[in-house]
Length: 212
Image 1 (cartoon, one colour):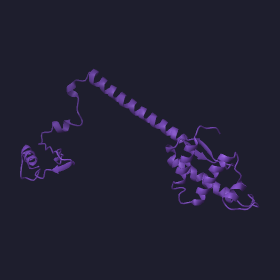
Image 2 (cartoon, one colour):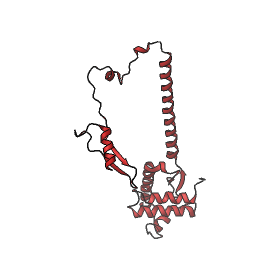
Image 3 (cartoon, one colour):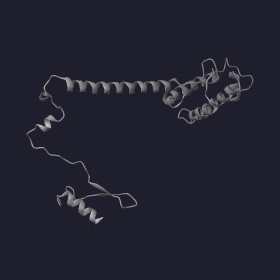
Image 4 (cartoon, one colour):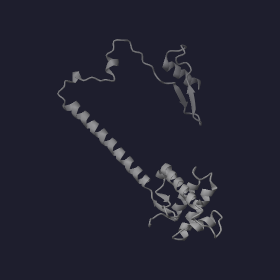
């Protein structure tokens, strides 16, 4: 099947597969996949008996009808490749497949990478449309609504602003200063905050800066 994949990209994909969790602990499957990749480049058809002799050490009397070893390994190899591209396929523009009934590997355009891009693009477009529509709807309601402005209620702040109880505002800051005159950036924390020793923030900072 004609494609535009380069030899460099083929080698990169093959290398990533052989280093993956599915293959790195199995020298047999590494050897088998490497052999198929090399053999597929050299000839149009890879024969079962060649695999049996070159990879599994069988002799010329090997009988595929009575010894399913090659077919069994190839079947498992297909599953390993399928799992690899299922979990890592978005990283590659092409995937490796071994068509059933054949032993020659093929490099096919990776649909998962393309579909992932399309899904992400559709998702971002949908979010953008929703945001724009929401902003437009808010604009129309706020500018053309016949409901008096006084009847509008801010559900976030009204309970706080109209509450008659005493409010306490807490400043979420550690009051950490940076010494800009130093070659290395030094962070200085003011230990007097909330200690009861001093209450004037300006006085604390001024004194701290004089010390340093």
